Image 1 (spheres, one colour):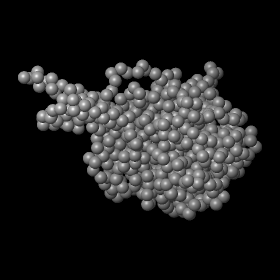
Image 2 (image 1 turned 90 degrees about the horizontal axis):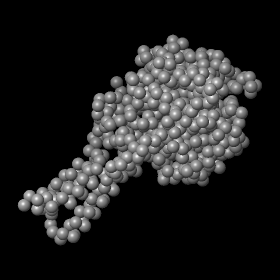
Image 3 (image 1 turned 90 degrees about the vertical axis):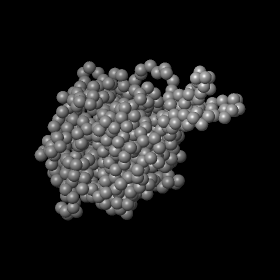
Image 4 (image 1 turned 45 degrees about the vertical axis):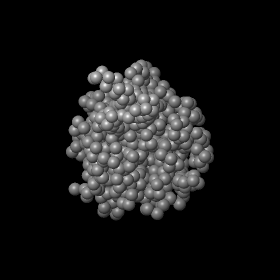
Length: 584
């Protein structure tokens, strides 16, 4: 009798086994480098006209058409810039608006997307050898040059633009780092000083560079970043200068709020031990050691520098001890990003050239989680042996694994797809924050603390503009390892705190200021596998039922329903609505 019943229920258990396992194959693909170059395969023409090396590459990610997929803008210093539309299937095609932003005679360098007027569409700022260009995104009509009416056509030699709302008025302000190129280019320090523009909220900007004391904005700037280094809730500014041009050292301006003829910034570079004098060129800011504050990595023509935030307003250079000093290279763009989703931010560095032993591949420093890094360049698949300058990251194919675009001044652009999702079971979570009301639309300056199911906390801050001439994705990507998410806490730029518990993993969510969590990503690979397995299981069950022409016993149906429910991914309906309370 028992075996007779087993024979009847065995097909149902097979069906439920398929549902639980997601139909996964037992065989695993062989180990391989995490990145593979897909430039040509994705439809991107990475060629770039060669120049004398004095101009940077520009690579910027942004969803220009609002279809949910990140498009890619690439500059060419001796030719036409190109806007590629993401087709949503792993390929790119020439955007119908590419010609509007081509700037064939501008000798363009860096570029960033930013929604400066809070209309929900990313606008484009391009740094040129001469007057920079601001394009307003007109939606279905493409882009319109609004440089003159906006007042941001700085005619210096711009390298990198950074956006941040320093006065928390809900509109993004702009910092432009200018490099004088002295003595080769014959320009003056005064003529090429950096610019800080205040967004007036009406489509125009005002030059407020005079708010920055200390005389360190004169002609040596390569890259700057808005970053709240002292955890007081407002964005400070860190500037990387090139001592070859002007040996004033790097600058750190602490944001001290209203006053001082409009707004108070205090230059604390020396007091904070952040006035390093190097031939600085690239900058990455992040909490790489997960101690709750932002650290600074910047490149150099020689040993690199990693300033670890001590939590008391000061920094300490730990580059040598951590294994990222890399003294034999000439470093340029750099990014912190978690390429293997293990919960620790790794570091990628673009190298222009190496030492006497020849040019080594671009370093990919794996974060070991103990304050040290291991250089994985030889096995990364993204070593890029060209003369690299810029780098920017984004998950362009929405598979939950961050990809890279690297710009070489002599060998064009290279797109590297992260393939670790094919072999790794590490979890991840992507959060796209959207401002509203008193918060800028891009939510730049917002902070997120993510606490996982093991009680570990990660901190990330929404930033726009760093690396070198680059625009990374604005979405915050958290690697989780094998953990899940217990709590997400957001501090919006206006000080509002929002808490969300038990957020479903392995997908992208959109969180709009003052509203509930929204499932943003169309479908994750895990969910896709579950849906496929469910469909197969239900189809087999239907065939079996019709073939047998018999009714299932109630307990058999209940068993199948129970096991199927256990196999389902978490439901958004089970998430309590976020609570917003004033910051304390």
